[in-house]
Length: 198
Image 1 (cartoon, rainbow, N blue to C red):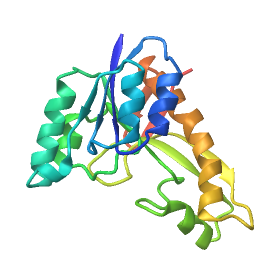
Image 2 (image 1 turned 60 degrees about the vertical axis):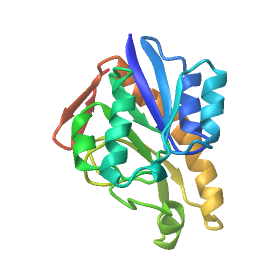
Image 3 (image 1 turned 180 degrees about the vertical axis):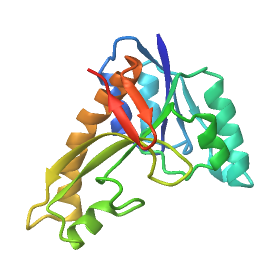
Image 4 (image 1 turned 30 degrees about the vertical axis):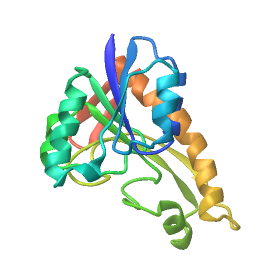
């Protein structure tokens, strides 16, 4: 049974999609948030999942917070750490600790549009396709080996909100599928490429 710790900062809709997927061979060991008021914590607790709140504002530096976060995560001995709307930039030492076993989902077709405001930037750039990317986390923000992507068309009358609404449907489908592939040992990292075995 592979143990999974999920990190959130808000309502955790991708966390909910992963929990609801009921992946064979996986147990959600804990949900951890850097915001004590994150709505996803209450949802996870209602499902009987252990939760931890670590307010990043209570730490003097990014390094201090990451050290506390690492200790909280390691208390659950996870095989996989899943970032699901976790809005913190992680230090290189932290990302090294979980190299090859930490996933993130980003609402663009990376390497296009890392960072914030991805949907508005895609519209302004005239993109015909937008989407989401699940990737392994490295020290460089929104980079790392890409495990899977899903695309949606960008419509002529799209706003950032309407595009985001179509992309998140794909996020909720794609992320559990990639987590399942990890649990089944079907993801092989080769440099920046990830092979997904049948």
